[in-house]
Length: 249
Image (tube, rainbow, N blue to C red; front, side):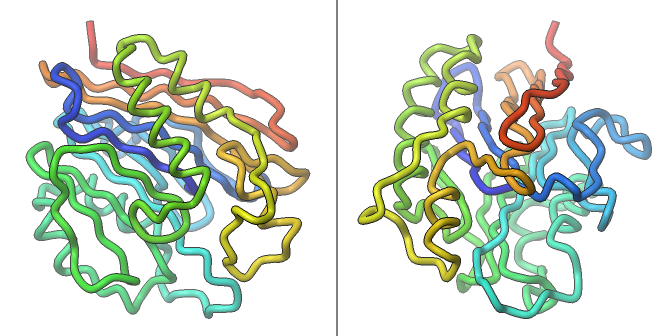
């Protein structure tokens, strides 16, 4: 997952709203978003290679999502980062408690958002301690929370405007589909070749082997109903199937 924007207790009727793009190699096997067979109350995708997930939401309002920290050349961690959101969603621990006991040395660089219905917490093994987030709009890409990369700044602005249009989802999926490449003088320098720095500067990433595989909108409504809508893509952004799972009437 390479872009996540979250509205936490900003909209009066939707206390949690999440718009996210999962960027990954197309060859990595995964299960499309749906109810988990071993825990049907949880809705999300499953990474078949390592067994974790990149994003999920539960009927009780628990939410978790993870992105990697872009660190070319850094040795791979002992455990898959996708186990963190999976384990949180399967349990009943508070977000602060779960985040506080993570042994970050076991994982490659990660950013993790955890919501238990009462609090939203940001965790990373590239920062000192978990942070309890106040109401607001937050963004994650492949660096720390709210790092002002151009695509993240733009996505947060468009997300804030889209909140006003709920329950219409059109504006959220429009922002997630933005393929605009940033000018070279605005690009971050993260250690990847310039051609890839350009490609990854888009909100929606596309190439032959790697790119945005899923665009997801998930929310919890004030009455407790949850919904996850996932649109999937193949090489060069080719549209594939979509999934929509909702407990709303």
